[in-house]
Image (cartoon, rainbow, N blue to C red):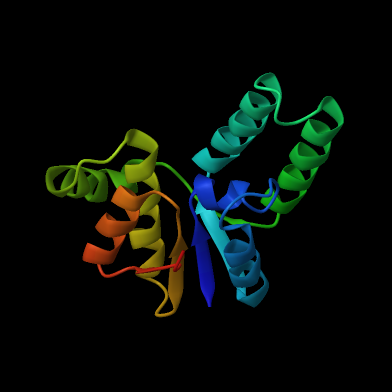
Length: 141
């Protein structure tokens, strides 16, 4: 099984929160883990925000950031380029999605064209519903 993670799912690998166990189980089951290149900036920004807000100490920030960067070097990345534009345009006509959410959905749709067994891990209700309507199997939360 290929696991495509949006940033909300990726973060759960490094910061214990609701859904961490679900993502960990799917991650361990997957033969390949994939995400969009935008998840790198989104993930690190989320960790730094949690540090500024007092949820992560400086030491914890360094630990989760290092683990994230290490894992990210092994994740199959979907580039953000012109190949995504038609899917992004189509999805935005159909659904009310935020910018990075539509990038993730377009990415998983393009990635799923090459694979019959892909699962989309995301923890945003609106994005999850849009993915299901597009025929993408979502990780059950």
